[in-house]
Image (cartoon, rainbow over all chains, first blue to last red; front, side, top):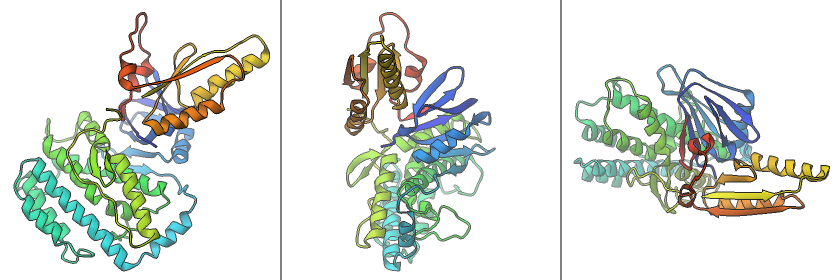
Length: 300
Length: 102
């Protein structure tokens, strides 16, 4: 069970030693590859060796690279190491319309419910209206309640003058948080033999992560809640502590049918339930419920 | 929680030295850190991980000598008193936190 996220924000040299990631800075520290889920490279002066890259593929680690604007620009994913890749690919392409539409409706419903929970946790108005949107979601969401809910929700959460397209701190923080989630979900999909390109609802020819963009929806309000609760401490760009806090959201507790667990574990369970949808079209998706921002504790 | 492994191994014959080197190498490869000479520790995430790593340890034991293993919780480990000397860089840096920053 992978459980660690490693974030590197200072100059470093990464190499493989034994079965661990060796991080050379002033001193060297080692993290076993076996424990790592994601590595975020967040500094221009990081070098890494080829054995590190191949170890990431071997152990199914998602390796994120950030671009000049410090947003995650890409993710290195294993080359489909699953034993039944072709079988899953056929299942994905052959999924019936009704099953796909029902799965999409379940994702949208839970997303809107989580948006309502987010408003409640922030002490804002409007959760009744969102709850009513969530109840009205039909198979395939033909009324596009997802967009209606989002328009209402963002205005409630960040004020009526808020615009998702504008370049400002809130948007940068949301984009960063979503990008980290998206990569972690893409990693979970690949680890279970699913192809992130073939989506349930998202179907863009130019998007390599259609399925990740489907599954991310109910997870997004976790980022929204964090950003709403921790407004900018500086003007403009994100500062390193902002980014660390956004990556740390992978370890926040969410409610799953199996109980409370970290977002990283919830992604694994959600992907497993998605695999069952492909295998046998009658099953339910297991999706996370937003319950707050408490970090998951390994021991009590 | 932490799995701690303590050992004393005979180092007289060539075969004994070889067994020691192989055992130590196994520990490092399985993600243990050297806390002191002949005392190695590994962070575990839950009892499933404990079972897995104990089973691997059992498969890689040297034929002779004395090897002990003990699991302690993170709280117990953190309560360890350092009477002389300082914690290692590795110990300070790679704690049980789910997000590690470098």
